[in-house]
Amino acid sequence: MSRKPDAMDLLALARPASLDRGSPVSADDLLLRATAEAPPALARPGRPPRSRLVVLWAPLSTAAIVALVLTVVTNLAPAPTVLTPPRTNQELYDLADRIEKLPAAGGAYWRDVRIDGKSLSVRGYKLIVTGRRETWQPRDPADPVLTQVWRQDSARPATAADERAWRAAGAPAQVKGHCETSGPCEPIPVADEPEDCTYSLSLDPAGTYPDTSVSEFTMADLAAIPTDPAQLVKRFRVYHETWNGRGFTQPFEEFLPITANLLSMPLSPAQRAAIIRVLAGLPTTKVVGTVTDPLGRRGMSVDFGGAGGSLVYSDKPRKELPVYDRHILDPATGVTLARVSHAARTALGATKGEVMGYQARGPESGWTGPPASPPKGCGKSRR
Image (cartoon, rainbow, N blue to C red; front, side, top):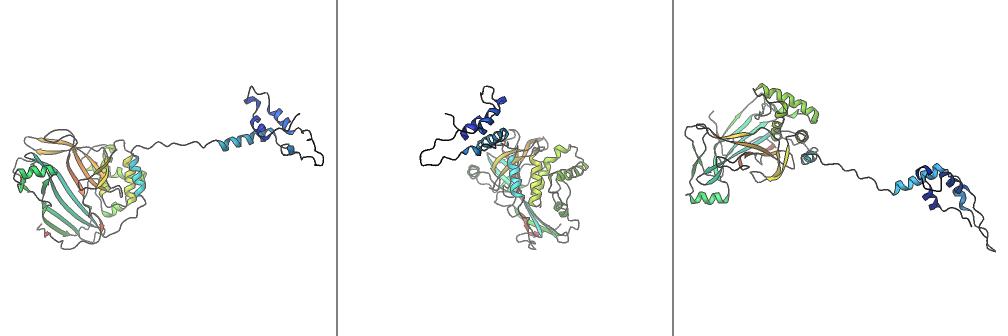
């Protein structure tokens, strides 16, 4: 006895014969079976005959059945997973995304506190020699510039073990530093902070920003740095021309890592984000990892691949140690916390990779109000 085709049977058979070479049922056969009238059902005494459900299938064409099957298969199949491989230096791109929307800070002055440090080996122990310089740069060039300088560096033991060795040597109150010339060196006091602070308060109508390592800027020039990476690269080419005008001859690609110095200057979060994106795309840039900076702050250590320098120990005879720099960036703001120099090789009492010096941004740095005049604890400069 024949029966009306079941709906699931139709779905299973709804496949063109040309796609299923071994199938005995073609699409035309399927259409005939779907539209054929099934024999009437046997009626029981006293009950009306059951209605025929075949009318629900009668209007379906072969194309409609195939479409229905494809729809079911499509709905059951899982969506393909799109895997996006991480970009090189993804940490820097993530940092740029985090800081881009931060609000721009306000203030009449940009306070720049710079702490310089360098390693000094003395009689079997090591000291860190530090100096301090502070500048209050006004946003409005009509306001005075305040400069504070600590003329006397200070030295302190580098580690607890070095402190024990220093005490074992009699805890000398002064030590002799490295000299870059053959002349005598002034002794350096062993103390926690640099000494002998002086200040100057003067007007600078040009409003020139003191850091000219990338180019010569006014505060207005810095505020006009583009936030679009493509436009920023064009601006960098202008800075490169200024750089070469000073007598340098390196190509543009070798100049680009120097622009990382902008990250410590008075810029908006969006400007820093654009600079970080440009630097992240350089083939010389490498994220080293999370480290602690010389002032004890956690940050992202990045090697931008710029040309290394050297530490000069003496001129005659010439003794110098090659070094390479790494920038430590604040993970919350993208500002440079410190630029740290490492020994490029083992020589002159240093081990390869050892920290030999740094320039750290003091925690007081940033936009603020007018400075106190005169600054507490500083004498006025006689210059």
